[in-house]
Image 1 (cartoon, rainbow, N blue to C red):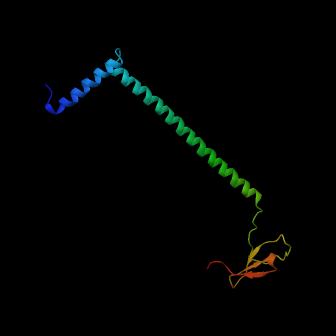
Image 2: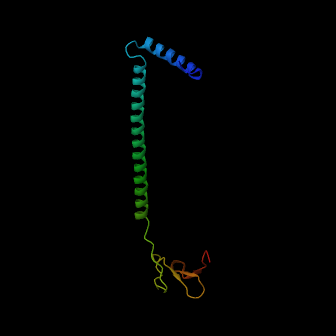
Image 3: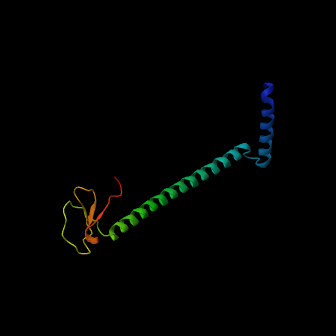
Length: 121
């Protein structure tokens, strides 16, 4: 009583169910469906574990990068702030760049007061 367009699908379904019943006489197709659902559940669990592991690794990588940045910042000498007057300190430790009024250049105390031109305008 099926329409002719659905008869081929009905025959395929009957053949599939008969083969499933011959493989598993007790559960038939229901056993195959149960096995597929179990496999799907296990794969979803594995996927969730892999995603959690990826998130954990990304967090560890971010923490490691932050640690490296903190260590690099602590190992570099502090940068002194430029002032707009000559400091008068000509010791090698006084590496201040000071703005020279009028020409837009910079004095470098460490280079004996040489004027450096700005890199940009």
